[in-house]
Image 1 (cartoon, helix red, strand yellow):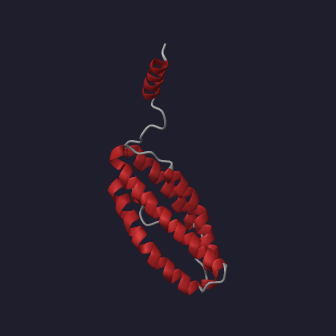
Image 2: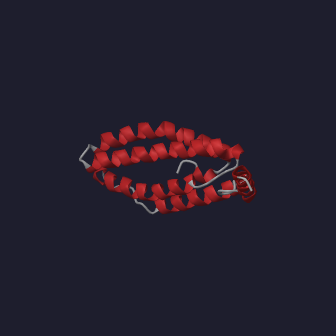
Image 3: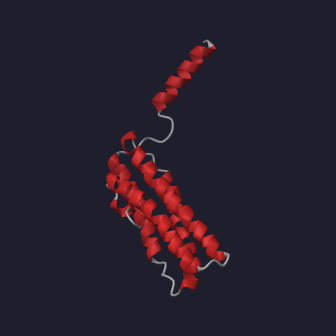
Length: 147
């Protein structure tokens, strides 16, 4: 067999074997993403809000510890092409929010004013949360809305 014939055979075999994860149907995506978000929401509910502005840094740190694994799990989902753009945009907006939370937590850890830091954080999160919620709504995954 020639080198090109072997390459062609290997390429065909790989295509038939379906290299990589198979794409999730819309229903499977809703189920898996919903499960991921509901689990993270349940864990986040166990984080008590800070009693004073001084507790904001610890509150953010604990929330980040919940949201980081949630983001990783959502990034691991592979939907079909019809849903891929919405999922990508939702996850990207969620990732942006998590980056803002981490940045605010670092500022607080270094002694920044909690009230000012949290007001700034809220202004940063609002547009990203809006984009994320629109995409989760388009995907019909209510468990991932406004968590």
